[in-house]
Image (cartoon, rainbow, N blue to C red; front, side, top):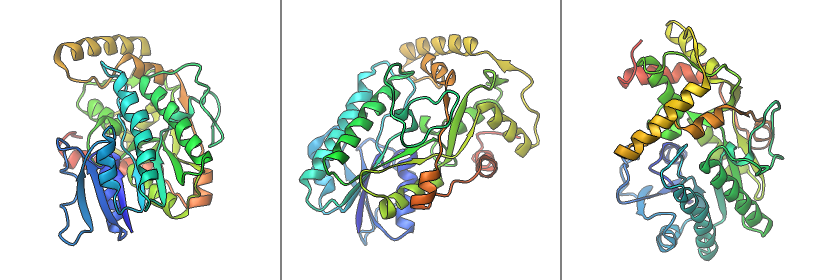
Length: 337
């Protein structure tokens, strides 16, 4: 069986390609000519792994890449809390999905599409834990990324209602070893913490997110391909916790001191505005921006019980995941402790 992975040069996409190869699948990775493919395997002379050059915003390139494939993992997305041009979120995250669905329809060999959505597509869960029945209220969006993923989610669900064999999966906050991109925000914040640039807790600890180890999410994707039912949604989330808890667990694992104070969100937001100004001057995207703080003012807690029961999803605890991540960051020489 030949599978194609969009977004293969990204944090999740790269790990997914490697996970599929380890399980014996023939993998075609869709990448741009300018993509960093250093985390991907070398193309195989035997045909088990190959690169296809294209872009989800280029429909013709998708038709060429999908040829002779049986399953599409659509993991490509623009994942940033803020961009100077927010229209890019919609051209990639919404327009890209539309192109994938149309190209898959035209490619007669496609048997199933696994679409990587996001917990943001379901909306905040202030004061409760949500499951797959939640639909975004669309009253307020913290970020343009969230809005684009909510719109794309509706398109995916409508496609499923129209008979497209699509399975939608919703990872939580993905973390773990691998590329240090915006999609690996936990690693980025731990680097800031251990390098002394983030001396305190972020806010008062009322935030709550569902954290997913990247390799668990990879296995969840593969399980969704094998056991997931078309038209169904599966939350590939994990332990619900705050970033305060992340920093506390990290201190215990590394046997270092916990932060002694909390940085109020209004101050982080002010720093975010300065970061946005710096970005407009230099072109370097900020790690923290005002929309990031809007996200932190809400809770995003979800249950993955359906995925556990239906596709044998088996997420590890934060303690287990961070016990792996922190030594990896140290061995990569981006933190010291």
